[in-house]
Amino acid sequence: MIKYSIDQEPIISVGLVLPSDKQKVLFIIDSKNKKSYKIKCQNNNLYVNDVLVDFFELKNEDNQDIFSVNDIPAGRGFHWKKSIAIKVKGSLKVTVIVNSLFLTNYIPIESYLMCVATSEMSGKCPIPLLESQTIAARSWLLAAVEKKHQNLGLDVCNDDCCQRYQGINQLTQSAINASKNTRGNVLFSDTEICDTRYSKSCGGFSENNQNVWKTPSKTYLQGLYDNQNEKMYNLEDEDSFIQWIKSPPSAFCNNQNIDEKELKYYLGTVDEKASYFRWRFNFSQVEITKIINKKMGLNCENILSIIPIKRGVSGRIIKLEIIASSKNKVIEFLLNSEYEIRRVLHTDFLYSSAFIVETTIIDNPIPTNFILRGAGWGHGVGLCQIGALGMALKGKKTNEILSHYFSSTELKKIYD
Ligand SMILES: [Zn+2]
Ligand SMILES: [Zn+2]
Picture 1 (cartoon, protein in one colour):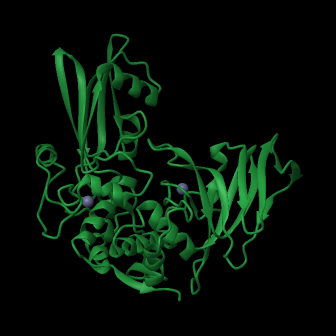
Picture 2 (cartoon, helix red, strand yellow):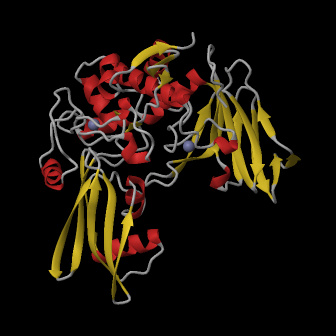
Picture 3 (cartoon, rainbow, N blue to C red):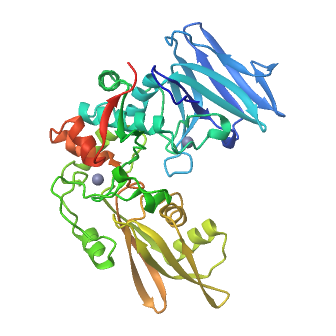
């Protein structure tokens, strides 16, 4: 894992296939040496081309070789989950943990970051967007606050859980330049490397970190209006938030600034659905009851009401009450985080918890439909990727984008 005293480019460990994926088979091709490996896990043993081994390693001393790996999970737990083939630099190591394959990619951080830029967004994005994305990705990684996979000895996984990394598949010259131009540059708040979070679309207003992760509040991760004029909104208030959803503001991430067709061009290949700034889901009573029962392990007959109890500064619901009927009794339960709310109210995962609930009631008290009208995609803390794209398209520079989303921070170079 990354060492803290950094004066030269660190090598990081990225989990490509995790034990929790329960994967049994992998194919790796080393095209330079014209070799291919079928890697299999059976009865807690590892086989490479049908030969039993303790572990398998492909070294890449000068980082010039490229390995192709098939069947890498992407979008775990989200609506876009799929298995992809990727090409990677760095070295590879495979072991078996609890009867599953575990594949790690050891790679110099700058080679990793140029791939993150074009996996998170498309390599066709304007340079200031790619540079901002790269600096945010580098700072987040080196701040190492989350350490979600510490138990596996990994710095990060390859997915949205950490940062999206799909090898060199979509790499472009501008992404390579974005890494070169910003090499070793990270954002600091006082003496601390910033935990620079980002998400796809804030919906017009970003969220406070403490409302999403219940972590100590960070000055540079407090919610703000995603525009340069400092208009005030009180989106914690239900009526103001309803107004906000129904008459969207002219934020940088507003689709008035970036046409949704254009957005597809800039977003890359994984995210194919198009509505992020304002969206709507219409669930019938039968559908919503089925989803909630499945996600909560309940057996309710009807959902009677879905009530926002507490909203964060972006309007994201952080406490939600659900009232349902079960065995002819009325039951109530609370969902206490934006993550849990998004997990429970969609077959996969709801775009964001910044939504209002409208119901159609014909036969009181059981609504026939629940319509969720929402804003944004993701947790909404820190940099808004679509907003940053909007800023770059308006001609804003990298430092203007970073200081807009991460206020009172300073850019410093920590290795050459
Ligand atoms: Zn992860
Ligand atoms: Zn935004």
